[in-house]
Image (cartoon, rainbow, N blue to C red; front, side, top):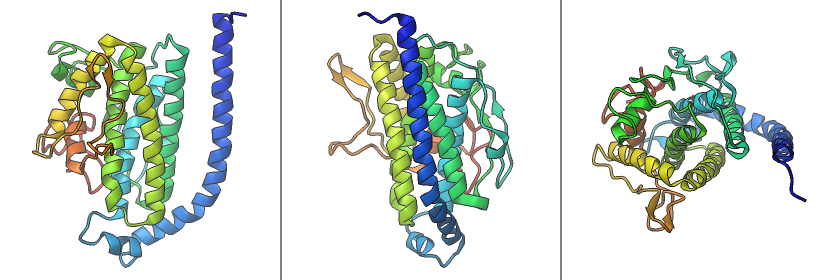
Length: 318
């Protein structure tokens, strides 16, 4: 029997609802065990003589700085996905913290036409919201406030600047990532790719084993997200070409300090697809803090700009 389009839509919605219910149950169980670890982790991070900080001495920044750097990126991803999926950003109770609380240029709900892509958007928005809550809980009173974030629409907004640099639109023209599900996918892959490489690059510097475990779990989720997004993009030749142009801009910024960029195009030939950015050992490409900042600020050695008009909050911001 051939199922109707309406029936397929209902089945997909039921499936997403079941997934959501199961995820809530898993998180409730996980939060119970993580609550003790988060409290202990936050306490040890705040103590200068703690094992975690002792491990980091001379090797890298304190765990609090690393987690707050990650929190800034999670704020950015959460705001984009939530606006795209729901038309509203993070709730007010997740915006406060250390440093100046910024504002977010308002995004728009995407007029999705495909149930699968809409399902991706809804699921990723839910995950990024949970990541913000999770990291803020681990940091406790040390969590930074949300900085100014630009995920808005206009000729001088961050998305348009990237698209202009990539040649997707002419100088002074608008690229609206919320205008279509195709545009949404380009914006989504841009953020999530950077998130994966940022977590991978920071892992070696985290002193607390519990926090390494948590960071690895978040990294895995981000990698699942971008693997799906890249697959959806690869299903459309013109979309793949557009993404590769964006990737070229990102790779240029990543290498602006002579730091190197192992990323290549998403599709090198018609039958050779790069689902994940890896090195010759098939280890995921890792970015330094400066490489990540170059990309999200939109310029080499900048202290602010791009998607963070006034810079990140926290010590790892320049």
